[in-house]
Length: 173
Image (cartoon, rainbow, N blue to C red):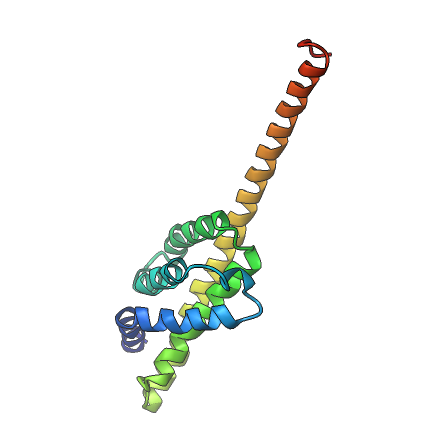
């Protein structure tokens, strides 16, 4: 598995820009990701390139959940602040994963039967990484939405109290 993983990691890192461009084309045309259709190229590409360049750190760690939590919390924070809906942020990530495999397959990097067997075995690690990603991202979005709602309630109650003071001549009743 190590040889395959190393090959996959190297091709992903070395070809991050090319893979990201293919991903961008896909995410722009995909009806499941409309928030990305008018996103600036630079900003959208930075999402994918950051993921592809951090693939080794996420894939080859003794503590995959900790690495995933750190990277994907930042991913969730950024997508949330950009107004990307949760389901689209997750689907964009799924497309990023898909483009790693499509690129590797297209390059015919894994030709022998042994390499194909190793590829199948390492798929488990990749799936685990993406399972963690979905868990972290959805949890973080929930946290951010709750925080935003609490802030709105706080501001609304402040505004209501302020309106009351104006209506009653500066004296709240």
